[in-house]
Amino acid sequence: MEYIYAAMILHSAEKDINEENVKSIIEAAGIEADDARIKALIAALEDVDIDEAMETTAMAAAAPAAAPAAAEVVEEEEEEEEEEEASEEEAAAGLGALFG
Image (tube, rainbow, N blue to C red; front, side):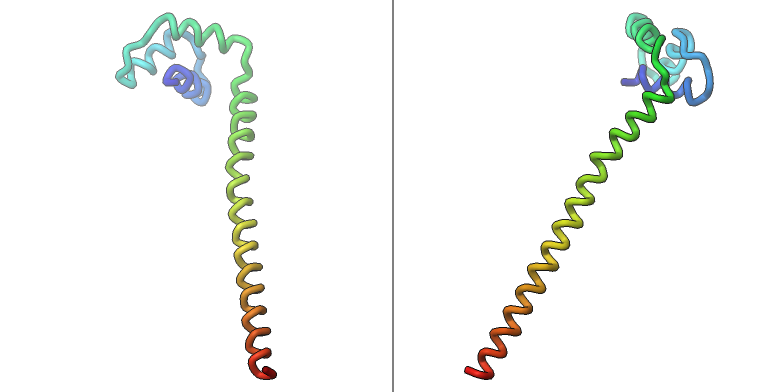
């Protein structure tokens, strides 16, 4: 994962994503660089539009994050409806006691 982060840092800094630059970032982080992994990363990124990949990933991550929030709203609404029904039932029971 750190190799991908190194590539993202280089991209954000508008630097060339090449073996030398990736290796320098990995080593600066205190990690022993694996030349084979670096070469594989560089080869894998040759035909990748990093901006588009990051944008697509950000959108995909945002969609699932919104789903739990919507579920919480539905639960809150259901709880409010249950509370309203309970108070209506209590009111009806109170009227029944008056007319007994």
